[in-house]
Amino acid sequence: MSTVPRSFDDDWRRWIAENLLLDAAPAALHEALIEHGFDAAQAAREIDAVLASPYFHGATRLRNRLRKRDWILSVYGTLDRMRADSGEIERRERLPRDEFFEQYYCRNRPVIITGAFDFWPARTAWNFDYFRERCGECEVEVQFGRESDADYEINQPRLRRSMRFADYVDLVERSGPTNDFYMTANNTSKNRAALAALWADVLVIDAYLDAASADTGFFWMGPPGTKTPFHHDLTNNFMAQVIGRKKIKLAPLSDTPQMANHLHCYSQVDGAAIDYERFPSMRDARVFECTLAPGELLFLPIGWWHYVEGLDASVTMTFTNFLRGNDFASRYDTYHEL
Image 1 (cartoon, rainbow, N blue to C red):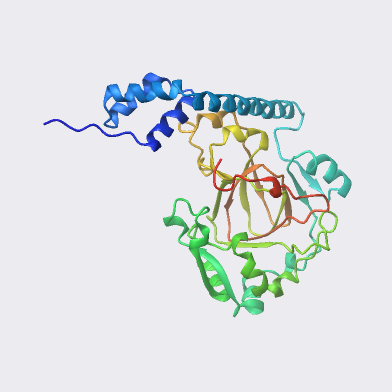
Image 2: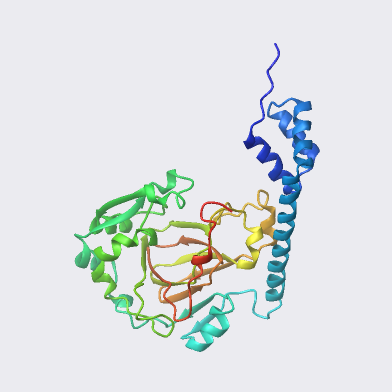
């Protein structure tokens, strides 16, 4: 009994073009198309049509310009590797303001600063009982169902749920390791007002941050095992660790071509266990790892890829209101694609 060959549509033609632009061999594409049920002669004609198209030749020119940009990024990465201390994330005690901005902020280099927010009331007052006492009856927003959604970070708007803060604190306190529920910066628009009493315990780190800014920070709270997948931000960021520890993996902005960036600011690479067979380009990326302990402040430079995992039940505050310019998002226009 004969089988009717599949018909080509524009999605398959796009697939052919994209793979040819990625230097896939025409013969390999032809074989793959046959395996997917296409007629051999028709598959050959479709591949030849793409190769002959002036539109494809135009896309090839654009691809080559992008490859030059990738080369420029690789030069930055190679030069940075030549620094004597390039293999680690430095830890600095109460880093002076001018040195922070000149040596780290403006040079796109991460650093962990210790002693920078020891003056916060939160450093001594915050614990689960304190949270229940001050804000227990407040209604907060939390993400639930993250473990059943492989794209939980991308789909976070549909995972939101409201509950009493005391109930959430109880859940975090008694939970074992899980990524199923997490209160993140994406919930802060509602939680900042609900937890206003806690914000009074978080004073401006005016050595680096702008006290006049309307940005008063973002509150993160979750059990051990919470994860934020590899992604990059559109701003420079501070992570102030208040309770518990977090493991963080970082890759430089200059290694973006290696990071399997498939959508917006997200990577397909699983930061928990990097699969070098599936993503061989990651062998050429520099991945730094550090543990952020209570009282430590991590500077995450804009564009640096980072994966974050809670080692303990943890509370973190993040900030973007630096004393130097931090508006890079206004020129970013690839939110929904690459």
